[in-house]
Length: 466
Image (cartoon, helix red, strand yellow):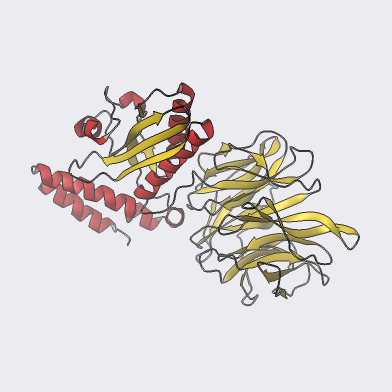
């Protein structure tokens, strides 16, 4: 449902006519908030194709997040970790406006019976929602009781109340905060999942070789995944986030060549996948996880092939001179693949049906080459790297139907290999803006860039789908 400007004006007019009625006023505010958060983003949302596609056009709700109360003595480090992580997750989610703690009332609640609605809904806090709760810690266990309340509607049921349990460790304090943050975001975004519990796979040289690594969405918990002591490139998550397909350099028939490798995050080992002649790279899972597309030169020119997830039923889907590579499945339909081809000269983007038919070149309004296609979760937008004649490498997003473009980065080093978060509101990418090649994330409109890696050379990030 899209809310029109006319309907918004009508609701506003009714509200003004009945402002003397306190109950009507509270109901109108509650309804207006629910509509703004769950159904549309106002008239600007309907007019702005890019914000519509990313979900960033929603009017942000003001949320207060006071520190949790203590039900038992807790190590200050755990308490701080929980609050800092929760605040950071919510601040960066893209749909909330966090109220500064300097505006909070003197008394903060730790459970629903302690919440004084007027203190939080009135100035200076002027919050719509409050996320609050309490922590309980014993020698080995940590419990967080989290609540989310609409302070503009005291008669409304508590929007969220849940107890999160884990070990009394810094890692579990982070995990519990991520869980509560994701639940809050899901409640306030109409059910769309938060990203605080997602991971990012990437290529790092920190161990001395290019290996696949993984980290939490915010850059914490960086750990090495593969130990091939060779070259590993282009990691791509499976739809259920239990496997990573990537390009590996391994021996085949006496020659070390690029091949497709599959790593299971569940069993912590490589899974068998067929080897082929020539160069084989850039794997990508279909949205249902049943197929893998990749580039192979086994029959001469690099072309795109598709197999089932286990490597069987190999068949070729492109037939053009030159290089055809970097396939990316439309995650919404699974019936369309974006890829890169230099069949007409410079490498540029093409679209095709998943069986290779209906090939269409994505024309851009300027020269240069375009690579690294990545679909938004809703299957409407395509992020990619475009090197224009000026020599800059920047990230753009195109609406594949209207062909409208928006530039997300500008003149800040080389910005390449974008990958969408599953919420459609964030993008991870690699950039040399600070000198070295590192992994960064940003909101999907290009704002709030954050550096995630710092040591070694880090590149080719891919955001897990869950």
